[in-house]
Length: 302
Image 1: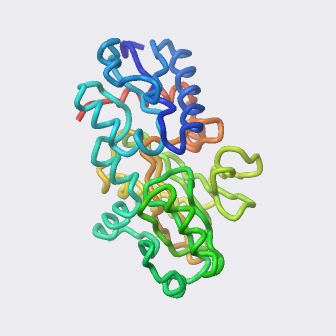
Image 2: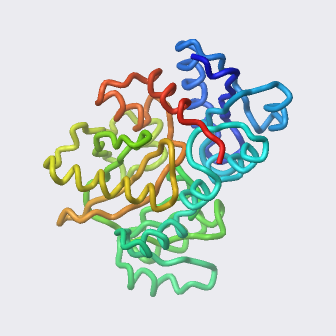
């Protein structure tokens, strides 16, 4: 594997640090197993200028959340001229910001759930009446369901807002979509099989994603082939609408009538033993190690 010296960026200082450490550790082991000269690099403890001083030829970004998935690290790597995995600066920033992503999708005519932006002056009862309950409250720029709540009655909306605003000054209230949750992995120009997610919990929260053993991941997803192709095409269009490249994962839900609603794009998806992109890759015969190499092959600057 002639990639030169490769840094696996993991850890960082976001609310998703622990997940990132696990993702990065697994990516590091996989790349080394394939003969890549890969080294761990935690930007919480290291100066990114060390990437130049230590002559790293490219970077695998296994950071999640702020300061890793939001365009900031991508901007530094652009400045340093070091090829990196995943989307560029603008696409990373847009995908991390659920509010801007929704607005852009709406401008492109792509479906996303109704929402309102909350602040300290919002009439929460009126918001609950307009959107209906249950509804979701979430920070605009966090991942892994950090700071997110499912609100069943309007009286609980204030507490949900107080939790979310701890993580981001921009908070969304989003209409509840009563149907299956799906995720679509994208690898270059290849759209991988859809995964259907089922959890006995209130929703697919942090524990369901990374800790619980009772979350079910269904591949095939159970949809008719024609419907699956339609949703794969929609997901790819949503990915491209934000300017994303390389690899990523698009999350969406269906309502009871089978109508899709886009949730978000992850530009640096999880790579843990519970993660979805490796699962989808396995379904088409791509091992975890080969997936890591394919992602690394797409590293670029600009």
